[in-house]
Image (tube, rainbow, N blue to C red; front, side, top):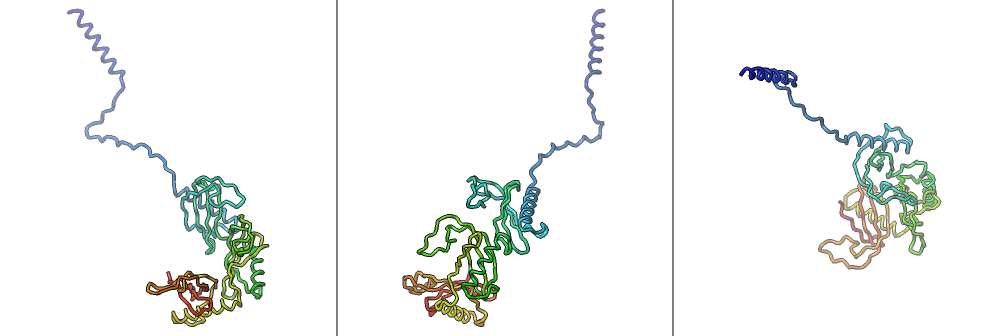
Length: 312
């Protein structure tokens, strides 16, 4: 018994020493609120607005440089993520080698003084290409525009100043005849870059195709002034539309007259209860304008039969 007490005392002393050396735990006093649990830090997600803003800025800067205008004059009207069919963003030139692989990027629509431009970029905005119509006066198109005006003035026998350019658009024609070769003409089947130019002469619109330099010029509108049948058909269409709508004849403007071959005697516009002879019927397609509203009229060769296309 005398030996047991010292041993117990030693054990108590060691236990006390262990407790004293162990880590302490703060126990909140009664009535003290526990600290709130904190959420783990959120993972950062890509900022879509930041990406589109960067792309917009790249497109605006590129177009401003191309057109020689201030960036403040360019307004972004639309931007969307797209997938292009090749590494040239769908806008490769005829002599350019483009990798045929899906290429993610952006399509940006820009406005410069009412003129809309379509711009393609890659995902980062490092590659930028312009798809849109080039404005009249662009340095690259000037020789072609001048050549088209001179050609049309000579063809129609009018003063050069009477030929007003409406629009100029870069194009790639499917052959060396600029897509306007005649039936007996031999045209090389090669992509030919050039321009499509719309010109106005006394209210008549003409579509002119040129090569890049303006050395080759062709008129798409096969409606020469002075063609008696075309004039007769146009006049008949004007009178018909004037009577149909109850407007003055002078308010009906002829935009274009094109020869056509209709599939039946009703000029392609027979009614459901009408019996039309199924035979090729030569005639004319006459485009008319009344205060900005376009109308399409079909006539036979002499203009004796006139029919209006349904308005959409």
